[in-house]
Image (tube, rainbow, N blue to C red; front, side):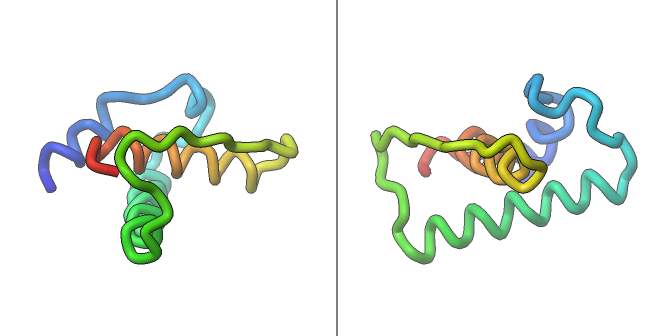
Amino acid sequence: DDATDTADETEIHPLFRGAPSSTEFRKLRKRLVREVRAAIETYHMVTPGDRWLVCLSGGKDSYTLLAALWLAATARARL
């Protein structure tokens, strides 16, 4: 929705410093977050009030997962 779109573009977490600012990258980020959120909802992976522990190996895939989870959680408080 429009509120989520605005939040995604104006509220950038320090995790995203140095990330590309191209339209293609923003579309990719939006799609990843949408798919992560859909998986969380479909498989009931998170219930309200849950706390998450995310382990990072330091690779790009770990940081991508962390970023997608952070965006999914902050874009909609109902997760």
